[in-house]
Image 1: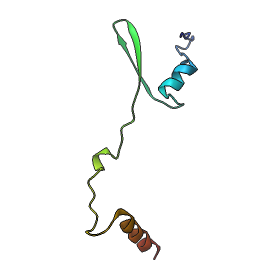
Image 2: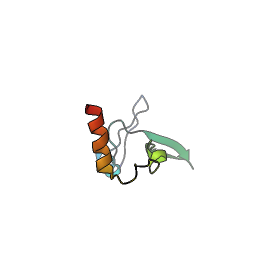
Image 3: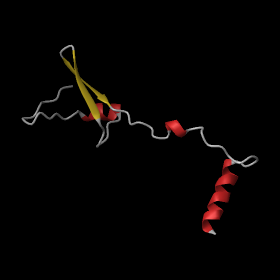
Image 4: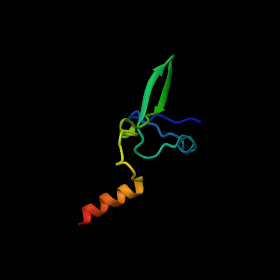
Length: 77
């Protein structure tokens, strides 16, 4: 597949490639020059929850569902 560089230095990524790579509007791409080639990569968003996963502790004897029900009931009343 080919694309034509505009006067402003812009290109349109062909639709079949956008679909295959899951590129949606607003996607961030990183570009670099490697051995005379332009290489673009989709930047993967950093998961802000990774460092917190598995860090919480539930009160003994409570399931997640029971704990959430208790906290939601406390918020209401």
